[in-house]
Amino acid sequence: MNTEKHIRLFNIDKLIISCFVVFLLTHEAQHLLAGSGLKWGYLLLLSFGIGFILTPLVCWLAHRLQVVDVPGGRKAHRETTALLGGLAVYLAFAITIVRNFSFSEELKGVALAGTLIFAVGLVDDLRTLPARLKIVFQLVAVGILIKYGVVISFFPYGLWGDVGEWLLTALWVVGITNAVNFLDGMDGLAAGSCAINAFFFGLVALQNNQDYMMYLSMAMLGSCLSFLPYNFRYRQPALIFLGDAGSNFLGFMMAALGIMGDWAGDELVKLIVPVLILGVPIFDMSFISFMRVKHGQVRSVGEWLAYTGRDHIHHRLEAMRIGRTGAVLVIYAVTTWLGLSALVLKSVTGLNALLQVAQAVIVFLLLGFFMVFVERQYTAIEQQANDQKGS
Image 1 (cartoon, rainbow, N blue to C red):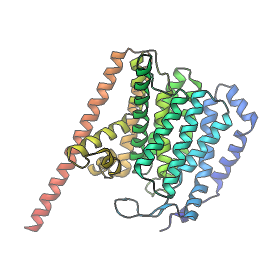
Image 2 (image 1 turned 45 degrees about the horizontal axis):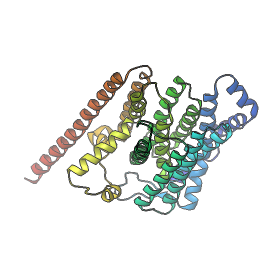
Image 3 (image 1 turned 90 degrees about the horizontal axis):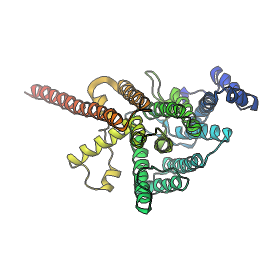
Image 4 (image 1 turned 45 degrees about the vertical axis):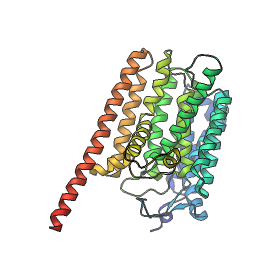
């Protein structure tokens, strides 16, 4: 069955939203909402409207250019599906930010570096790039962030302190970028999780009166939400996937938002807030790395970069017989819980923040143990059933 047959470029809902977007693009609408203290709402609505209109067009273009994901091998989808969803998400974000035309130095750095990550991902969707080369470009993007002052500030001033902060920034950005990319394994998972992340980053930004941080968060939230109706459809397959361009772009933007924010007066809390909000991809990356090394599946960085498997958190949740949609919704719930935990840290001390992290670590350890235990039990039951049939 051809997925292209299921998408309509023009219908009544798209026509209504197109008219609304045209209205939002006028100076009158911008001044009305911004002047009423609702600039966050303006950015959210504009990015959502643009993405909602552009996604079907991008889907049509992907099929015309044959930039599609064909079923087979480890892939769970059964229909040929467009791969350029990241283009619609990026354009919705970029047009909204440019239309806002209010840039700090840090916002400029995030926008430029994010554009580089998106461009590299787009090339990777069109013709596969080596994993090592993508890491190199991610490090170049980190260099852009550092140039524009988007750096994890933690170590004492001085040369060694600066070098330490640069290395920590690179580790954070590359780690989160690839962790979110790894999460893009089920319909709605990466875009929906990043929408929740962006929502809580935006709330914390509003709490701390960080306008530029809020601009980025709301534009990302609207862009992600606009993609979900086409990617996370009730009991129906996705019409379009993010592709590497989309998943890497979202991961990079989440990592950059985590660095950009000035979350609290306490230095320890500043580090813990983004760790909590992005707890799911951090746990998934840490968990699979530990399990793969433990079982001898990877023995070097190169093998780790090249390894692909169905052992991520969403795969393990699916293996617990709750279904793909159930696995996605569980991850949404955990992501929301972590975001709520981060919201209460505004006025707490470092000790209380550490207790929040300890609570999250305990829950994740229990979740990891439970997933492995249940998977082994199902395997043992199936093996026993097969043995009984054979005898």
